[in-house]
Each structure stands twice: as structure tokens, then as C-alpha cells.
Image 1 (cartoon, rainbow, N blue to C red):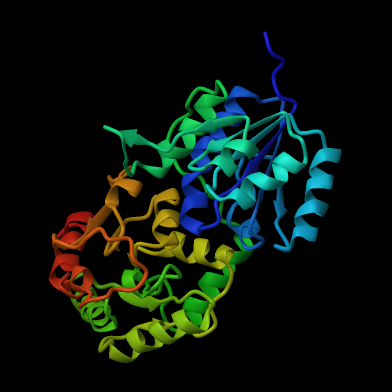
Image 2 (cartoon, rainbow, N blue to C red; image 1 turned 90 degrees about the vertical axis):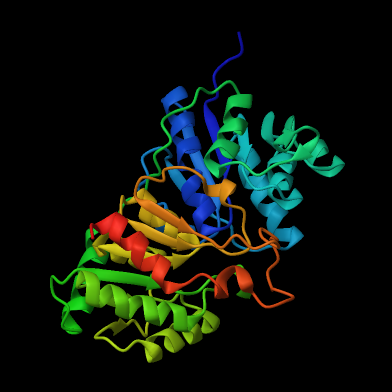
Length: 344
């Protein structure tokens, strides 16, 4: 019988939402091997996102993308004598460091020869009738851990909110005169590309309607990038009711605290959606070019809205025609979804 792993390395996904959706796979590894040291490596900004998640012991930020940086990290990984590497992203780069570190078992998906050469336990992508198919990312990641003989844990997403950031969120809202009022948190950006963006005018119309109907105070929160700040400013300028525009976006720790505080999140199909699910907050998601099967899970407090147009899901970052998948998605549908989630 093979020896259980003493040290397990997990290469976390790069997108915020995917990292959150990986937490059930983290938990499965912890429950199967409670004595093992489990280390997660991933983007530096995710250190705060995943801080104090109970299913791993250490988060190591990936700093530097050059081959010199990769070799340096591989030497460090080899020195730490990991037994397993669980490679959740699909890129060759993600599998390269564990291979250079000579970690004995390296599991992940392999779509090409290079990935197969870098992994010892190479899984084919999810297939049906000879064709690749989208599946829930929770299930996708757990198929990797199952390949290592790890039974599934429950499928709940896990994040932890820390008191200093709760206090920062409360202070920000108090300074804007919100106090204990229920808030509608609005995250109108998307790092993926323009094709995921619901029009700013639609966001503003929905905010005004939800403020009138449910007494919510809209709080427009961009991610800290010039593009998303510009989108949020446009949404804020179009809102006619009392609202808050957060002009200095904070970290992912700040995002978690603000999501926890909200009565409802209204968002494009982006990372904050999955933060809301992890923190058990109701969320309405506007879905454009992406396939809903990637995120078809834990839907009790979610409403995922899309238009049945002939060209979706296309997966393109920029729409080559008229962006009909989102421009035709009316604010009225958001109001109806909020009635379901909050009570008419």
C-alpha cells in the first residue's frame, strides 16, 4: 500500500472566482490527509482572498514570470520535498515548476503533449461523445483530487472575513451616511473583457428600481484598475437615487468584507459572485458570453440571468457584433430576480 503524502502542493487557479471554487478540492485533500502539510501557491493578490481558509497551512505568492524566477521557485519546492502536486490551472507554465522540482506525483488536466510530459497523473478534459464539455468548476477540480484517490468533501465554498476589514467597510459606509441601511453592492466591471459587461445604463436603472422597491442603498464598488474604475464612475453618474461610489477600491480582503455586509450583490459573471456564494449572500449575476455550466452549482441564493440569443455562449472577450447577449438583458429581469431572493 502506498505511503500517504506528507507534503502536498496545490497550484491554485489564477482567476478570483476559480480560486474560490477550488476550496472544496482543498477541503477534500485536508480531510483525506489531515496530518499532511498542505501548501497553496498562486497569485500574490489571492493571499488575502484565501487567508485563514482552514484546509491548507500556508499560501506562497507566485512572484515573477521569468524562467529564472520559475527555476528559483522549483529549487525551493524541491528543497521542501513535496510528495504530491495538484495542478488546477491548465497551462504548461503551471505544471512546469512541480515538474522541475521533481515532485513524485503531479496531477492535473492535459490537453496536449507538453502537459502530459509534465504530469504523472494526466487527466483528459471532461468529454461527452468525443467532445469537450463544460462542467462545474467544483466538479472539475475534484476530478483531479479523485484521481489521487481522495474522496470528495462537501461542495461548500469557503472564505474568511477578518475584523479589521469589517471595521474598514463599516467606517466607509458610516462616513457616507449609510449606517445600518441595507446595501445593494454593485460590481460592474470584469477583468475578462468587454464582452462580460452589462451596460452601465442598465446597472443604473436596476439600482434605482431596487432602491425604490426594496429600500436598498446602492454601493458601486470597482476593482482597483483604471478600466473598472472608469466603468464604475459611469454607472455612478447615471444612478438617480442616493448611493455610494467607492472611489478608492481596496484589496480582496476589503471586497470580502463589503460582500459580507451587503443585502444583495448585483454583478457581472466575475469573481465577486463566487465570494458572495462563499459568504452566503444573495447574488444576481448577469451572464453574457460564458457557459453557465461552468458555475452551475450552489444556486439556492443565486439568480443567474442570460438572454437566449443564437450566438451565446461564444466565450469571446470582445463581441464582434452588437453585444446582444447583455444589451437585451433588461433591468426588469433583475428586479424580478431580486423579488425572488429578497421577498416581493
